[in-house]
Image (cartoon, rainbow, N blue to C red):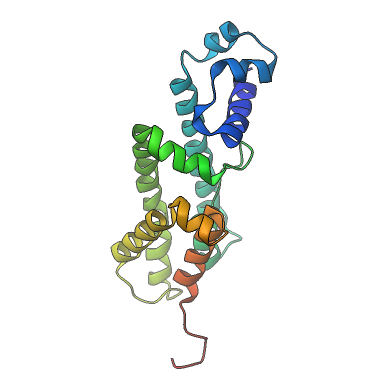
Length: 188
């Protein structure tokens, strides 16, 4: 039942943002509000549970990528930088922005998780440098660049103006990071 509630809550959030009510969610599920509150004491706890599930999902995916011996380091890096949650329906960009505004504590929690995940990404970068797969770079600068890029594109107006999803923009950032802007063999 708990997983069903989380999934339905994610759907509500995609439709209404974080302003959905527990009453509307209970109706969507065909259960009483009391039953809903037996599983989650408040909407805030429910939303935090969704964020926690997404964080764990992304962590599990990244660890699986790191441990996948069939992938080379470039592919591992690409996949790690473009991981998105699989547990729920795709998270609407508006929901991410809504969370940032309405639940800053959860946004901070999500960012702490991202920081912890950077350890895995940094290890792949350093391994790639050691093996000659990546050129010698100062890894903390790459991390700072990506964080800055994510913060810059996590702007609703920018995403709407460019008619792209957050995930599509992350894909562009990853592509530019890995392949640069110079055509291979040209002006090198």
